[in-house]
Structures are given as C-alpha cells and as structure tokens.
Image 1 (cartoon, one colour):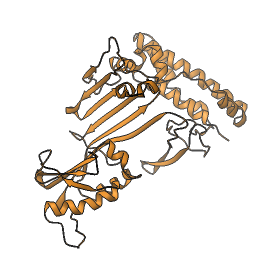
Image 2: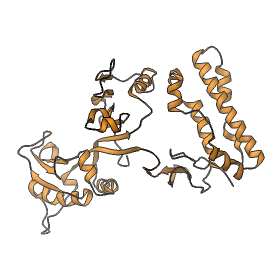
Image 3: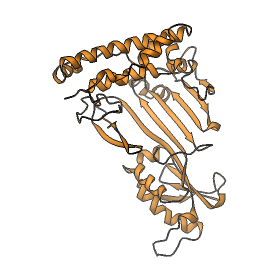
Image 4: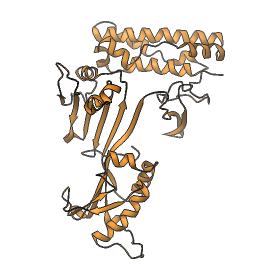
Length: 371
C-alpha cells in the first residue's frame, strides 16, 4: 500500500527548489504564508506508520531533511550569488527518486498532480475527482481535481464576467415557424432561445440605443444581468454576461456555453473575469504589495504597472485596492478588501475578506474555450 504523504513531500520539495528567486527575497513570515513550513500532521504520521514499511518511513524522513536543506541552500545562493550556487543546484537535482517504490497519491485539496500513478486512496481533506490528461506520444498524466467543500474552507472561486462574439452568418438559426432568421430583429428572437437553454434566461427587451459600436442592443435577463449587441461590426454578435447574471444562471452553464461556442466557427471569448474570495484571508494587501516588489508578478523580466487606491498609510476601515497590470495589455489584476468595501455588517463579520479578480482579454492572445 502507498501513502499520500509521499506525494505531498515530493511536491513540496519540488516547490521549494523551483520557486522564482524573488520568493526568497520576501520576508520569512510571507514565505511561510505562500509555502507553509513542511510539517507532517499527527493524522499524516499515523497514516504513515500504518501504510509504510520501516524502510519507506526512513526514506520519507530523508526526504523531509532534503526539503529543509534545499530551502536553506536556495536562500543562501540568492542572498550571496557568489557562494552556494553549486550546492543549491546539487540539492535541487536530488529528486524524489529517493522515494523509489512509492506511487504518489493526492493528500490535500490543492489539486496535486500525480507523476507516476494514482493509488485510488482518497484525500481525507476534501473529496476529489481524478482526470486523465493527454500529454502526447501516448502518455497520460493523472491529475487530482478537488471538489468544492465549503465545510472545509471558507474560500470560493468563480467566473465573474464573460464576453463572447461570433459571426451571425456562421451560425444560421431559424424561428419557431421554421423560417430562417434573416433580419437583426428575427435573429435576436431566435438567439434568445439558445441563450435561454444555456443560462436559464433569454433576451427580455430592446434598449433605446446601440452599444459598443453596434447598431442595436438588448437586455439579457433582468436587473442588468447581461447585454446582447448586433448590427454592424462586420456582421458579428456580442454577448456580455455580468457577475449577477452568471450567479443567477442555471447550474452547468459553463459546459453548455463551451459546447455552444465550439459549434460556431471562429467564435471566441473576448473577455473573462475570474474571481476568488477568501473570507478569512491570511494574506493581506500589504503582503501582495511585497510580492509585487519582490518581482513575483513580473512577466518576461519586466514589472507590470501597479496602483494603490485607498488609504495605505493609515487604513481607515473603508478598504483598499491594489491594481497590477493594465487593461490595455489584456491582463489586469485587482486585489481588494471586499468585506471593508461592502460595509453594512460585512466589515464586522468578514474584516479579512480579500477578493482577487483577474481580467483577461483577447488583446494579442487567444482565450481558450476550456478556461
């Protein structure tokens, strides 16, 4: 039998030796938040003793010692590049081969990837599902994907905005009468049924004017849930669904939308916002700013733009926001104190509520439908 702790140790070891050097320039307290110190819990130790032989336990203990040595060597080489580089590289090249005979298994709810196999042992931290991912040349990799379990953690990730476009002539549709939808009004009427199948609601009314350089615009759903634009723009159709609209959509809308777009040639997602709420966040906005200064948000060797909104010198309880990147670049990160900004009791119940929002656009890039 095997133990998930072997996979946990191996992955933590690899994390320690492959992190960007900027990580080791962070204060120790922040390093511990991003990569908590490696310590087996009592429950893991019990499982270790029950499922492993004495020889395997000994190898796990050796791996734990290597993990600590790798972190120290990496930190020393970063602090003084002239010394310790060879030692750090030598330690980093000591792979988890020391765990020979141990097939890694998922132990935590962080989506650990199994390199050599999957024993079938479930994680005791959260329910998980196993997905086989094709790696090419006939090779597959087992990836453990955690299923949300709000009783285990007060965190929540979701899609907060989506825009997609397609050419109307590449997606011909018919009215209920069986006649083709030729004009814009007819096309919107027929398209509303497809959108209802995807999200659980359709187009509700025509707006007074066009939008986003389109001749006509329509409300999708209620209370500003979304907008549909048509007319001009090379015969394209733009559909925007905002956060409240996605929250109100029928369960499973993501897969239905993916299938819908896959059936339309050249259909594309032009914007998608991904959000993550941590209601009792241990990482503050000051911590994120330190990460930026350490270069952890750099791309292609260049630091992105950064803006700090709110009272950072003397926080006044109204909430602060950190912006990283640029909307013009197609990648824009917003990190803010959601509980404090909402107020109305949220600031008392969730004073450490931090939301991270990543806005992705297709400017100079292609947004995959499987995102």
